[in-house]
Length: 458
Image 1 (spheres, rainbow, N blue to C red):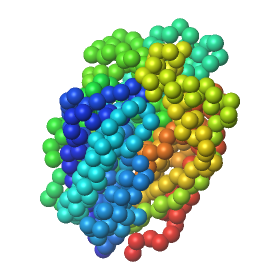
Image 2 (image 1 turned 90 degrees about the vertical axis):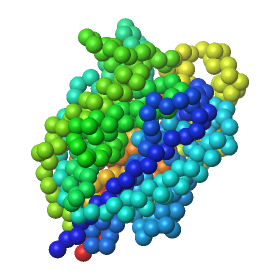
Image 3 (image 1 turned 60 degrees about the horizontal axis):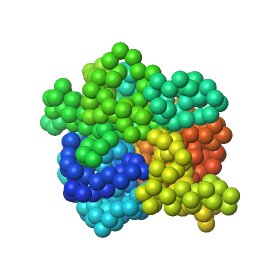
């Protein structure tokens, strides 16, 4: 008889005021809180085999800090570091937990928060394992509501490609790419304990802006479901979203309700986060009572190192890049001949080139996969374009495949092959070359094959 158990816990991970805020290439420092940041975890256990899936409300956690956390968990619990997968929700109103060249900041505060996160997530693992209860697991998929997600890369009428063009720009021709509107829902019912919902959907958590800490739309999903479903806890695992945002460049009807146009010409406000969070919670409610329950006969984690080529700049490219970096570091972005998202693009591209002036020639990406019965999570250490997630989901033989961004690392954008020729923010700032998308898909399929056919839990 199978002995499937699941545990859940969450902890508050709010920073102190004054911490530098992740998200943009302009200085922002926390002045208050719109809502709490959380780390939450689900433990899956079957006949003595236990794995941990952890989600952190943060822009991204580096693989070095991830390694520290997973080894700390191994030292404090019975779970091996290899059986821990940690992902970030990528909220753009969370603290930096790593040193960066995006703007000048006090690294003492950054490192202090990283140390805090290490301890809090270790404690979280202990609490989650103490909560293990007999469980059953169901899965279901529903279509996301309209008007919450949009492809954010556009072909312009003048032949150029632009990420997040200004609203109602007459030069906009058409979006480049297609949305994956599948909302994957995992429901876990536990004996004499709260049920758990895991939501998987690909959309940037970049609705709020400003200098107030917020979990963005993720927090609204959790709070809405907590009220709608008594005794249910929620975790959000963000799917492939590198080219997906929440701005409708041609707004209609009430699209602008409770919404502001930000410095980079996008639709942002706490109201946007509320709208998206409530809408996605509504999608969960459509399928919650009709999930298909699955037998869980296997729990397994596979991790692989994927080597990919680096996008090393030429000496000619570095001339302009160094000039833009000097102006940016001096706080003189006004002397760089671009505005809004185009300015963000050239600054980010310049910093990427200067950072990589002396290599490396390759990067090693920590890819991961977790199998829970007929369900698989595929961890990607950065932000893949939608088509990468779609191709991974096309793998046969699974009840559900959930790609997960910024998982076990934060390595940048993974654009489609075509995007490197087309241009746009994501491709121009990516540290990788055009073959990275196919490499990730191939590695993910190798992981899925290993999860499916090797070393079943007895």
